[in-house]
Image: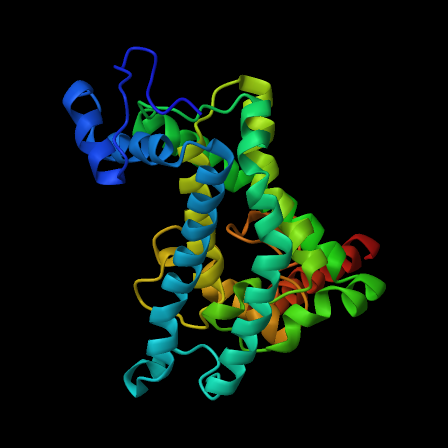
Length: 306
């Protein structure tokens, strides 16, 4: 990896990370603090594959369990019970520990090998890995595209997972908890983790292959936001400030919790539009709307006959 850009000064590195950071900062004042920290890490490691692998895995574990922790705490505070969608189904400590063990097993056996190969794959696809970083507006635009593409992938693959044999042999594990909780976002068969995770990775890879324009930091931010979305969707809580109240097309916990409760419908990950267009919305309101549409069509047909 290029620790610094072509217009940055190359120097003889000290032995410590802090020493490298201080030395790099002297000669690369045009870089901001995050860019200096980034470049110093790769200079310190002297092995791009290892540097990216460690950074990626630590980032993933920190975000996943760090974002799950608030929901674990909330589950133990009686005040928040009024916001619990399925109010009587609070996960026990034993359930959360059993879930954590399977998730960790999946992370180390399925995700770690992929993360280890991430840097050579990124470079092969033409992904930028050096500094300076791209503008935040560019990263925001790319991430928005990834959300749309991944949501489409997730909808159709997830819907396919509910077909008899696939559900029985693969997807059923994820539905062990009819009232989901944050830690259960990646509680799934290794096959499911691999197949659904492909949508998360394929969107940015496809983008960089087509456009030749993507920085690995953008992919990191995308994965972080996708983890936040998945964990929050499995939180089991509906608040007055939940995002879908401000963005009606956002799915969130209220949308996904019904899927776990009823085992059908609401297949999308981030947005509601695929379920709306394909008439796969789940829950009492959706069922009521379907009955009303069916009744309206029946009445219209009767009037034509008369």
